[in-house]
Length: 176
Image (cartoon, rainbow, N blue to C red; front, top):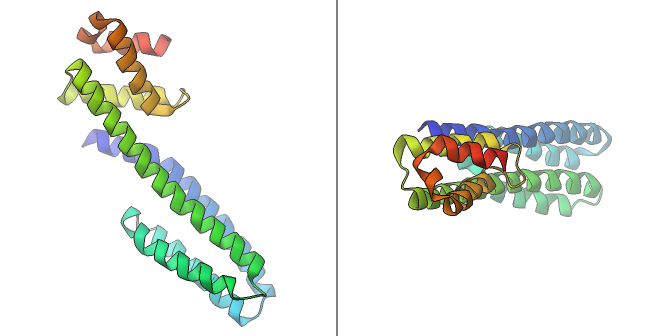
């Protein structure tokens, strides 16, 4: 459970950044809305609606995608709101993609950890240890935590004596 919490917390940095970007986007849309007619104000209220849904979490992503498509379609039909619609729609698409990427990255990480378990025979607290170390080292490695787990596997395969000592495997991987 601690591993999942740590994984989720590490992925929330991306989500927080996306949320900050959405807030900046909403501020820009509001400024443009003051200059547009009443139909454009209706479009910006859709963006506000989307912002509230994002705060409800990942479980709302499917619903938000449908609303985004509807919102995008409405904006496309308004000649006076075309530029603002493109900006808002692009922002919503980026946030949706960030959620999708975070979920995919989590799946890849879990798969790598399972493969590491198969190679090392690690389970329980040992596997949690490898997960935590991969997340810590992954911040400094191109490819992140998934690449770090792959390095554990490669180094462990090359030097099987390290598989008996998880701390030594992490230390050798970190220095490589």
